[in-house]
Amino acid sequence: MRDNADILSLQDELRRARNESLDARRQCEDLERLLVDFLNYNPALSFIKDEDGRYLYASKSFAEFFKVEPDAFLGKTDFQWLPDHLARQFTENDDRVRATGRPTEIVESVPMPHGIIHSIVYKFPIVTPSGRHFVGGIAVDITQRQAAEQEIEQLNQALQARIGELASMNAELENTRDQALKASSIKSAFLANVSHELRTPVAAILNANELLLNTELVDEQRELARIVESSATVLLHLLNDILDLSAIEAGKVAIASSPFNPENVVQDATRSVCEIIREKGLALQLDLDQRAPTSVSGDAIRIQQVLRNLLNNAIKYTAAGTLTIKTRVIEQDKRSIVLQFAVEDTGIGISETDLQLLFRPFTQLDSGTTRKYGGTGLGLAISKNLVEMMGGKIEVTSRLGQGSTFSFDIPLTIVASTCDPPPAVAESAPLPLTKHILVVEDSPAMRTVLQKQLSQLGVQADSVSDGQQAVEAMTNFNYDLVFMDCHLPEIDGYEVTRILRQLEKATGRHTPVIAITASAMKGDAERCLEAGMDGYLSKPVSFDQLKLTLRQWLAPTA
Image (cartoon, rainbow, N blue to C red; front, side):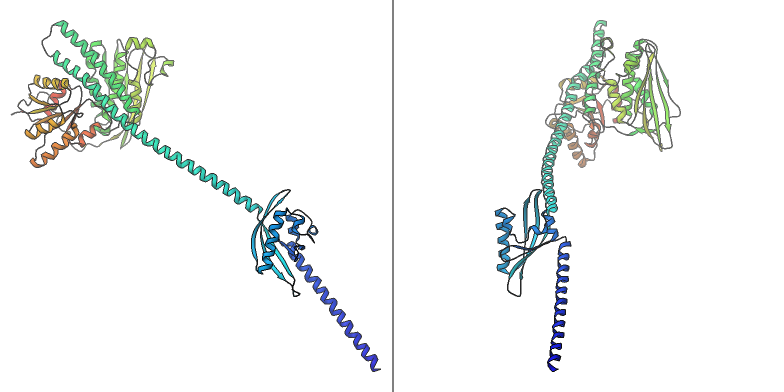
């Protein structure tokens, strides 16, 4: 009986041990399934190799990465599916991990039919309890990242190349800018010099001819002198037009702003052409808007220049009839006004087709017009540029055979008059004949003309021909007035004036210095005032201008 009991007990133990073994096997299978599923569904690529480099396991993602079935790797080495050089490289990496017992991280690239595949592989040693040495690996596909990095690198190289090109272009642009600035400076100096050199002899001709006309002449001589006067005046106007247009295109014309009376501007513009109007037998009318303020701020000189250009054109193309100058208030508020100036004539008029040609440099209606009326066709182009530089616009209306109206609108600032204007110099006031005057002029002809003009006015003057002589003369004698040419040899007129002003600091004197120059460039007047000069006259200088200057700057003798 006891033996039966022992047998039954042993059977129970065997049954229990078998059940436990089955449970353990199931647990192992479950654990294996969990591990396989974990590895298969993990996006990281994973594999295990034995001591001989044969794949014991390859994850599903690993097989998908290489576009094959997972079982395709099992039992195979790298030499069976990779080129020899890559298989040798991968095997050496595996051996290094086994030998060192330490994990390593490397980048591996595998050529496949669909392209080169790049991955970062983390290889690590696996040692079993039985002492077997396996190699495990987890890889991350970096093919797209590698491509992106290569693209970024290519873009960066292209960017660096472009930056280099831009730097080179920038250097070229800076060099071009420097050359342009240098060229502009050279052009400015050239224009100033040409302006001086061309205007000075023409001014000398006009002033000498004026002196000649003030002498006793027979009729034939006077007629010839008038021809010289007329021709030289035309030549001066042509030079002024060409030089003005060049100065405008070079950006050397400045627009100033100072208070003036619009009515006075109109009166001054008409005064310069009254003699020609009388000679042609034309009538002149003024139609001025009384609503316009008597004090506005703008560039009166440029407005007057445009008015003179339009008046000269109207006179040129009008054989008989009337010229009318009009002003009209277009817009006005408490602080500003848009004032229109217009010149209306009864001349030949302009056709609709020819109106399109106006305001272009060197353009006239046709060659017949050029031969008949003369001129360069620059006046309207200059006027248009000046009007636009002042912020205005210029227009024309015309009917062929009936006349034309040129008008321009200029925005101006209204200036409140807070004090009475200074008293005008009386034209009948006696000239200060006992004063000492110095003429500084490098042109022998102009120097002689100025001295003779002053002599005819009853005023005696000393003269010198360069800046160094001027400094010596003013150091040795206290002159009451100096007429100073700006362009002088040795020391220019600006520097001579600065030296004079320094000398006067010790004496407390102030000698009026009036610039007499043939230059008409941007900033000339400002440069004269900055140097310490008191006034500015442009060549040619007429008797009337000399008289006014003498009366203005020298107190009359008691």
